[in-house]
Image 1 (tube, helix red, strand yellow):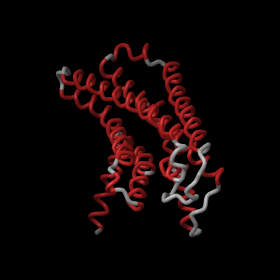
Image 2 (cartoon, one colour):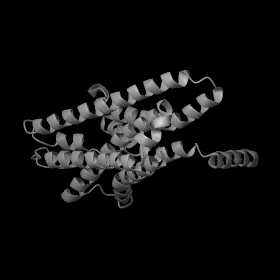
Image 3 (cartoon, helix red, strand yellow):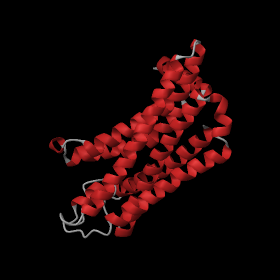
Image 4 (cartoon, one colour):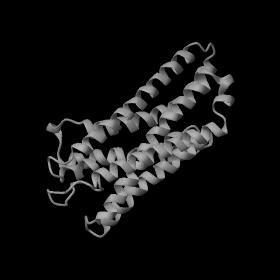
Length: 254
């Protein structure tokens, strides 16, 4: 579990470092400029980290399933070599998706200017600048990516259905607590990741506006990687005690 958490932390760090520093620099210097190559690099890195993170969260759901439903086989099914191979598959799949998405997006001619209503280079905003009859190839690639993502989502749901069935058969309350404490952080991270991403990409056009698009993009690109470490850290009892002391001290002093 901690090996996968290490990979998740690296992906979160890479994801938030792709968009936030440039946005902060533009805000400080009161500019919205980014070079063409810089925009392409930002799209590539962002898609890479986000895709790899979703694939890794799918693998982590499988890890939870084996740990709870087949604990006696955990060492044989998820040994160190198997974990490394699965993590490498998540990083490799993210890399392949990023290469395809970036190559297709920046091979399209831009016919609607070069101004994006966003704080970072986002593929849907770039597609709005392309010629209306030239982005069918990119749309097809996005559809394929969505199908793979939906497959990962179904796998996560089925894993948790099996986990819930196994937990309901545990006779002791202590076993319930241990199982839920293992799964809840991952389930919270997955829910936050998927809900913000789905709302950002499937919100009705009738409620779309530049300001709303900006807020939604911030929610799915910045909030999940920033909150994930806090969610998983809540399992640490020492951190919980420190937070309780800090809150009680703050309330007492106020």
